[in-house]
Amino acid sequence: MKTRIKNLNDCMKLFQVEIPHDLVEKTAKEVYGEIKKVAKIPGFRVGSAPQDLLEKHYSKNAEEEILKKLIPAGYRKALDDHRADPIGPPRVFNINFQKGKPLIFEAEVATRPVFKLKNYKGIKVTKKRISVSQQETDESFSRLRNMYSKYNDLQGPVKKGDYVVCDVEVFANGKPISKKNKSMWISADKNASLLGMGEDLIGLAKGQTKEIKKKLPDNYPDKKYAGKLAKFKILVNEIKEKKLPTLDDEFAKNLNSDNLETLKKEVESQLLMRKENALKINMQNQILERLLKDVRFQVPAGLVGRQKEVFVRRLETELLQKGLHKDDIEKKIKELDPKLEQNARDKVQLYFILDYIAVKEKIELNEKDINERLKAIAMSLEQSADEVKKYYEKEKLLGGLAEEIKEGKVLEFLLKEAEIKEGG
Image (cartoon, rainbow, N blue to C red; front, side):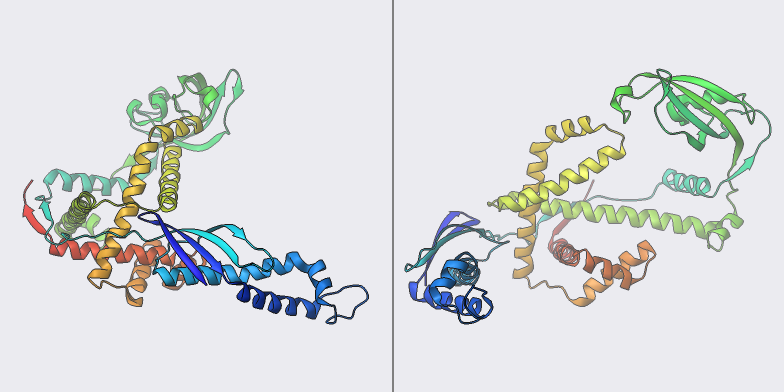
């Protein structure tokens, strides 16, 4: 069996494979032997049909089976001969299969890029100084109080700052443009309500209805109504007053703390931990930026394309959640295409760089690493570790999770080996 290799670029190889005639004949004999055992040809018992009739009736099936056996074997031989490290399946083409001649084909495959990386230890990193301010602590307590606030029913007319539970219908050109929203909460405050209409509810009583005209936002989901004047028909069902809990020891005990002072320390500790995590990510990003500057190499276009698709789908989801129309989303993605392409290329390059370091420094994963991550995911989702593991296995996500954990271990190693300078 003869194999030749042609380097199309740093990460694309073209193999030319020639399988000798005698091996083709031997394989053909085996394939026709299997066909003969089950072939049904008029005038002959199963298993007794002559070769010429087998070839006449089953040549197409036989050719498919012969190629199924020989092409993978020839491809594997080419990989072994030239010590190639493929990424993904090959593209097989130019198959020349003629009776009495060698089988010849070509296979194009993406391979792991070859590059050298020397200075990945001692990368200079700036570590910013962090602290928790009184304002940040106060803001956290404000959020906590809002989370545990109560809403008391009111009988009188709506006052500024009250919450109105109401049914809302929207009309444009005299026709409803959306389903009726039942039990919708609107704050009676211009700056904290839908299109500022909360202020228009002040003075209304329970059971009263009011029609309010407002201009719909330019990013309204149904583009034919975007920016148009609409009529909102609002029925007041309930009026509620927001009551914030008092910031005292009793409030702290409700949050499983001994007293208010202990709760303050816990809140400050959590804020500091978040800042430390953010700081760690920032320093790791500095390392990644340095690595990308230090070495550049070609990466498989297929991998870049798949990574770009991931970024595009993620961006589409984010823009949909912000209420952008489909046409606007497509326009935005088109504008960002060069950036998405570059981000995808950087992501793929970093994958190979971090994998290179993992191999060189013998940074490996074990079953314990994966199980611990699955347990952490299970705790955050309030599910059992077995349930999460089964889901990841079913959706074939364990491979991606393992890569993510390994990359994290490499980044931990690089940060430990970095030259860290305090500042900022």
